[in-house]
Length: 218
Image (cartoon, rainbow, N blue to C red; front, side):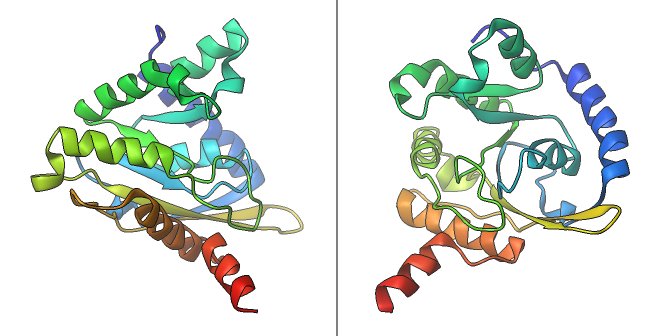
């Protein structure tokens, strides 16, 4: 990765996005007090539609970097634009190809950055997908390596997204939950399930795991 986030450009498009989205949606943001005042954090939103991406940016109080699928970075011009806005490409099918991106994310965390990760991996409109634990596992391994889990563990902040259709202007409710922390012995899969449960609750949805358990009991 050679292109880095340009904070001025990021702020400009956030301001532009605010002007655009306020004409289409009434955006209601709750729980900003749950965002860390300083230091790094993993921001974990529900993924309903593509509009989640700019709206989550509006909900945060500072620039952030977004984990995004590699397919968005194929064309040089688009790749340059996305990375200058904080995009970090991850190859979901071949994680080995993403080692540079993983190292870059680790550097950002050391600098105290916000990292936005959509744990479902893709859109699940008005439903919950299963959380992908691989990237979360890598963050937990990094936290353990840095020995942050002993004194200053990384906050994992769940965010719920709810879209309410109206005749003229729809509403988007963004609910920022309390941070979840992982200790040194935390198991990644169970920790991911816990995160997904919180995201589902904040979004007013049943988690994917709950649906699977119900089907098994039926």
